[in-house]
Image (tube, rainbow, N blue to C red; front, top):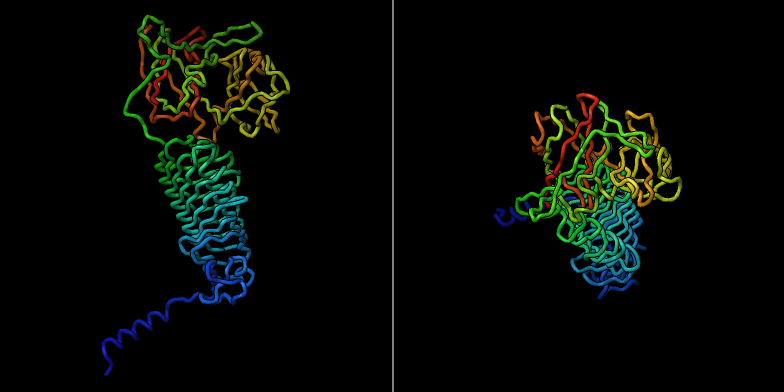
Length: 478
């Protein structure tokens, strides 16, 4: 008669028989007790270095590494290779993963002499790994990479640098050191269609999260950027930031700009009208359905910290006209200055800039300079290197090209790009029965503006060809 205990043992054995076994050879590394002359196929015959085990390993094998410090640079160049590390296994050097479908768990790399982790192979998986230094913590150039529960700190440039698409990051952390570093940086226009969930950053002064132009259609869900960190930069298109948290908001409050004083000092609102002028002296013109001159409601660099635009107050100065208006915002990250070439002067259409990569055909740009601080809005017709060709928007005047001589500190801000919803503004209509009638316009959603960003406006009279104007104060919170 078979006992119950025996039956249980037989049942367990049958179950275990169905557990898939690792089909490759397992190599053992023990930096304390091992020797590179050993066979390395049993714990008692472990090798002393990871590099030695790699010399014997074949594609599809695994290397298990005992806790300890290994002063070497290691490359996993074979496909399907796995590196299993005990907690406390430190690679004092660089790990390069150039093979495809490799798997690394539990390793800490110092990045001495380079990046801590260079992942160039496709379809690789890293879990529970830590970068404890290096120029870049995790440098990902191989597509279909998965990083789960990985931690980067001590880097001098970037925690996680991603230059390819279709990656999957989950529960990853980038801890800067209050210097000009980035946490997560999608650094090329090939970094598309990535998935980032529950990723966190702190103390990266340049930015916790940044995407360059062309790094599009990525999903960031439940990610956050901590204190003492540069604001999120998203120069890509159609990136989704679901439940993203970047900084604590202050208790509910509002400001207006220009601010009221009440201390015996005049505080007048900003006047917006439909007059059109240019440097030829032939203007101004007032005509129906043409945009008037641009006016700086909040000049750039006025608010030096991040701020949220809430809306605006409009005070009537002309009655009964249909006053159509637009409001745009400036961002120094999508701006460039003049760099030699033709002078930015009256009637010019070819402008040389310091960085043509921030401008795209079809953009609307706001051009400003010492000679005309309120500047003008133009359309971008062509971008060739750092040479930008602009065209004037349709206007009552027959003039083409720039309307003013800018004469110093010339800057081109991208204020509208159809494919990028972060580069859109607001528009609306206003009309009143008499002067001093006013209305508050609230945006449907607060718009977050980066430090030193500004707000510009313009207006068109949609009723008649006469002069028309209103006064404005912007409503914001910080």
